[in-house]
Amino acid sequence: VCFHYYNYFIMKFPLSILNDRILLPVLFDAPSYRIRMKRISFCLDTGSPKTYIDSGTAQIIGIPFNNLKIDETVVRLGGIKFSSLSMKNVSIKVKNDESSLYIFNLPEIKVLNPTKSTQEAKNIAYSTPSILGLDFLKENKLKFFCDIADDIAYLEN
Image: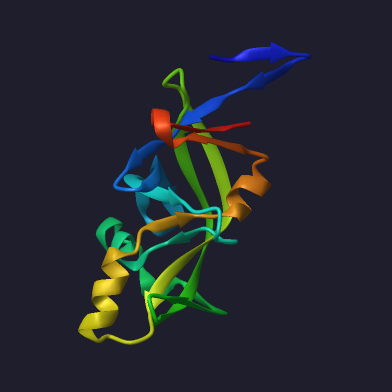
């Protein structure tokens, strides 16, 4: 449903709740990295200041780790250190509640890569979802609504 107030449209972007995670399915598009319209899901994490693509998803969709710039930031998840790699000028396409695709352009997104190649590090890397952080919500002026009891969650502009 779109409401029209003073030439302003309110759009809702449905989220799914699965296994105690609130997910936003998207089409990830990064033409300059030769990645076109790959289906991935981001886990909405209001405790995360940044948006990240996990290393497992990055490998599955073919993100070229060796072509990415290493950021100074080190991220710790599950006791494992991840280096933060930077991808520039990507977009995600999201269906709104009327099933139309809406494009969010991201000037930069971080890709996590474990700093160690131990089996434990690989297991944690593959069990960690891609994270949609507060930076994405702030930059796009999105509101987050959630009613766990009725299984309803969505983002709204």
